[in-house]
Length: 256
Image (cartoon, rainbow, N blue to C red):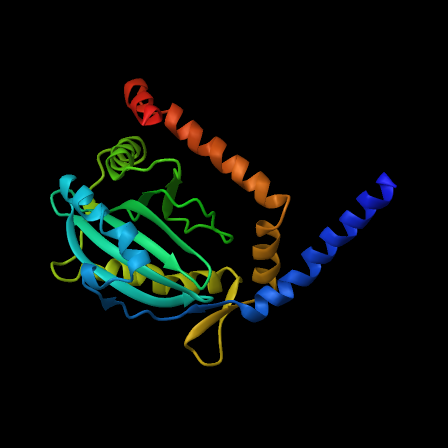
């Protein structure tokens, strides 16, 4: 009986790995262009405002100026994205507070980002969702979903800059055009994945869709048991990053 249960489970898991990619390929689309719309903080939807608004004074305490709150619309699937965008002009560090909404879920995270003249970008965030496609080779992303306070995450971000980009010059954006950096990153997403064979521009030229290669690889990374292995490896990698920081700094961050 036990052997039959294991066999049936294996067949079901195999079927999922073969059939789900077709569903994902037919349903997934990513916008080729984005046109963010300014939304005053007091006009944000209630579920979005509850996450973004409390973090505006927290960012201000860290020296970050609010550049604006934006509705980025539906970029992928049926998920709408709202972003509060911040800049610390003295260091050219950027920060975002992002909330994604769908018909059944609202999820938020915050991040700090610094781009250097060498082309390297460092991002430190609290996003617990791992990407199902390869990261941009020019961007190092550090994820610490257990951190709840922007102050703690920013101190960690500065420590990671010292480790990975010490002495490099942080690049800003022309005054009044700071949002362009984020728009470029989003609009390059589909193009970058087209170059590695994961996506192709749809016939309407307004969205990218997954190729068969992209659909299979995205699905397999998201299904059990691969998803569990990826999460475990991610936790181990981030723990190693913490342990490699100066002893005092790492201890304070881990206590927080």
